[in-house]
Image (tube, rainbow, N blue to C red; front, side):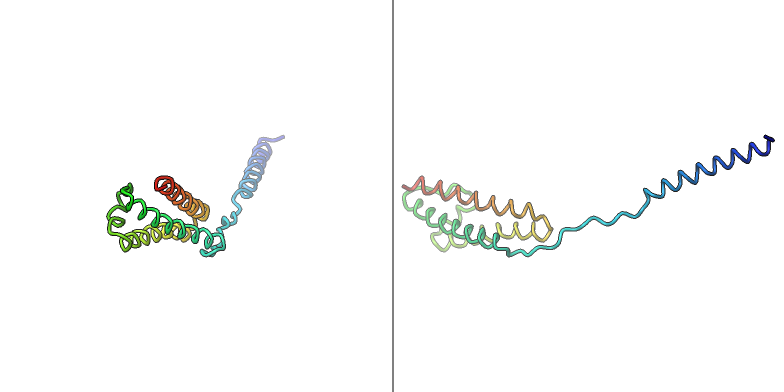
Length: 142
């Protein structure tokens, strides 16, 4: 083999290797499909309506048991609610409305930001927390 032929053969081998490497690399450069975004869901599902109804009922039960406890000489332990509940039924209603609105507001913000799992967890935590408060009130005022 002549010197020129060796160079040409080496050049062809290198060029072939580079073309092969480039084609293999091009397979990895295929445009990936964009990630699938979660489809927007409705806010007022059946589950949310039921949970909201339970939450509202628990807030009403909390208001009733709190006023009964205040009548028996107990005091409100929640420092944020204390100014409202000491003003009687109108103050209790205002405090309950603020608590209900802020709880549902947090759930709605989570929904709008598409944190659907956190939204469901937050709603269930609201119901569980209010259930514990009502159970504590009932246990104390007996």
